[in-house]
Length: 164
Image 1 (cartoon, helix red, strand yellow):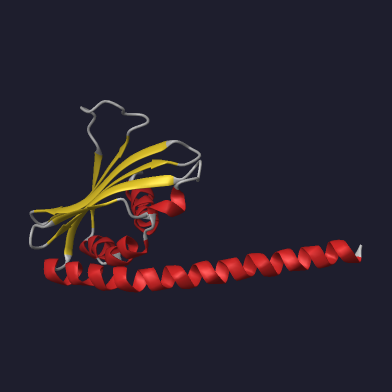
Image 2 (cartoon, rainbow, N blue to C red):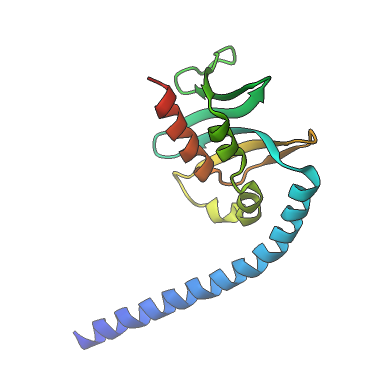
C-alpha cells in the first residue's frame, strides 16, 4: 500500500514539474511573439471586421462567422455549413448594436495570434480549428489559424440574442 502511494506521489511530482517547465518555455516563446504581433497591431490600427470559419469538434461544426460594418449598420453574419453545405447558401445576417460591434472588434486578437501554437493541437482528435481573417482600418487583412474560442463564444451569445 505504501509503495503504491509513494509511486502515485512521485508521479504527480513528475507531472507537475513537466507542466511548470513547459509553461516556462511557452512564456519565453510568447514574449518574442507578443512583441512582433503588437507591432503589426499598432501599424495596422484598429480591427474593423472579423471573419472566422470554425470547424471540427465533437459535433462536427462548420460555422462561418463574420462581423463587419456596412454604411451605418453593424452586422453579424452566420452560416451553419453542416446544414447549408453548398457555396450558394446565404448566411443569416443580424443587425447588432454599435456597442456589441465594438466589443467584438476590441477583443485581443494580437494576443490570440501570439499565444497560438499549432503543435499543441496536432494529436487532439476532436479539436476545433479556426481559419480567420482580421481586417484593420488601413485595409490590411491578416489571416490566421489562431484559436478564436473567446470570439466565437461572444458571437454565439449575439446569435442567441438576435435569432428569435
